[in-house]
Structures are given as C-alpha cells and as structure tokens.
Amino acid sequence: MQRTFWSALAGACVIVGLMEWSADAEPLSVTHAVPTGTTGLITYVQENEGRPTRVIVIDQRLQAMCVYDVPQDSGEIQPKSFRHLKWDFQMENFNTGEPLPEAIRKGIQRN
Image (cartoon, rainbow, N blue to C red; front, side, top):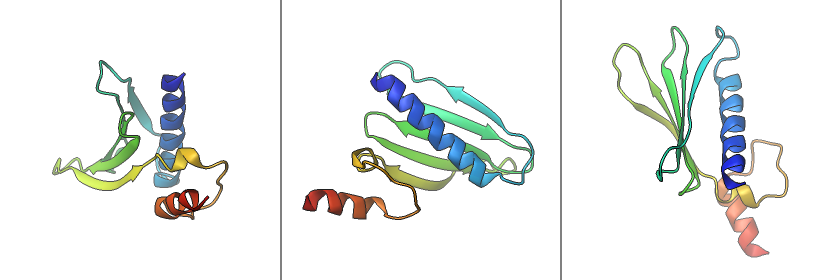
C-alpha cells in the first residue's frame, strides 16, 4: 500500500509540474524509472526539444523530492527545487499556493 501511495503522489507531482512548466510547449515525453532494490528512489525524466531535460527524484525513505534541469548544450545539473513532503502528508486538505511547509509544520505542532 505504501508503494501505491508513493507512486500516486509521484505521478501527481510530475503531472502538476509538467503542466506548469510546459503549458505552451510541444507534447512531452516522460520516462518513468520504477524504484528498485532498497534505494527507495523514484526518478522521472522529462525531455522536451528546445528546453532542458527535467529530472524529478523522489526519495521514499526521506519523504522528499528534488527537481533538476539539465541543459542539453552544457549537461550541467541545475537544482531547481527541493522539498520535504512529511508535513504535506499531515494536512487534511489543501488547494492554494500557501502555506509554505514551515507554516504547515508550525500549525501542526501548535495543535
């Protein structure tokens, strides 16, 4: 059940990220690498002509995700965002850009 939950979360994160990142872009090609062994990592790679390759890595053990861009011309890995998801999973509902994870954590700790 935990693997299903993480797979669903990862899929949702990728879909939202791809929709925002490439609203006016050509059709996307997404490759999904399933977690293997005991690493607990899920990796998504999105390639779109004319844009950097986007790599999304979700660490199930740390409950965190990272997003990187890799320009085709330089191959330099550029970190774009990192987020611990622990506090997100403790929300009952959420449907806006705010609050930030720190505000969520403080709100949960007050109760």
